[in-house]
Length: 329
Image (cartoon, rainbow, N blue to C red; front, side, top):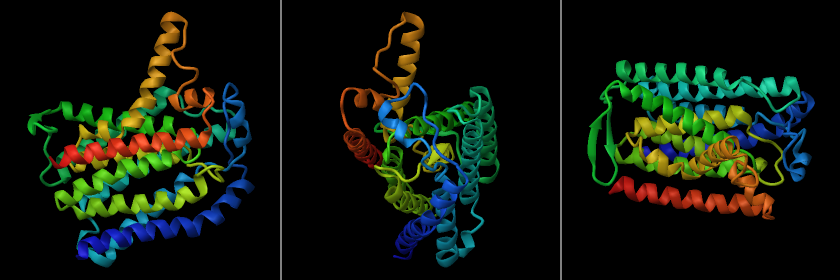
């Protein structure tokens, strides 16, 4: 019972901290002129978003960390220096910092271009290698084996597990980042994607990771109040990259690496739409979609922003349910 109280407490702290902080953060970001910069070639309907405060992800990232720390101090103080807790925090902060640098450069340049692709790639690679080395040396019971869902066959990836970690971090962080193009879209999808990992963590009795995940869901729910259409603030790359790294480390620590593909089905769809669009245009000179990522394609077909957002949330919810069913089989 105490473990479930810890989860509820972590959720509540994350939620309340965001609700308290955001009304103070939004005016501050306005004053500092830390506003959204829309692409010149972007949709005309999105031009009104120019100047809307961004970098709101800082708030829910800090709220999730504090929610987890406070709930651990209250309910499970002996685990305050738990290796998994430390690693999750380092990954979350590390990816958020990459996003923060990206956001800062975009704001300073007053154009939608921050870090170069190779710079992001290098930073993500360093974090992935560091994560793998930490797992190998400090996380008790860590194994490089990966379980194939449904058939429950274990395959030892050996040193290639480090490559898998990099792919998971890079793929998921960029997937969440690409989905952050409509009010509330990435926020809602992230909440739905985190939920299965709470169940996976409870299944293996890892309430430390479960509480971290519930704290993040609570923080995101609080953020949604300010981020849903018409958004008063955006999460920025500091939020989207941080969430991508967070989802990847949850999959690694709950040993559900391959189910990350199912959980993040919409993020995968968004990423593939961009890859397909770029490859098609470079090889054939033709676009497959009216605009990529694919959520913009539906906007150009005449769907309202809310219609696209709610439809994608529903797809994400179905992906989450499928992932839970497969995970408990």
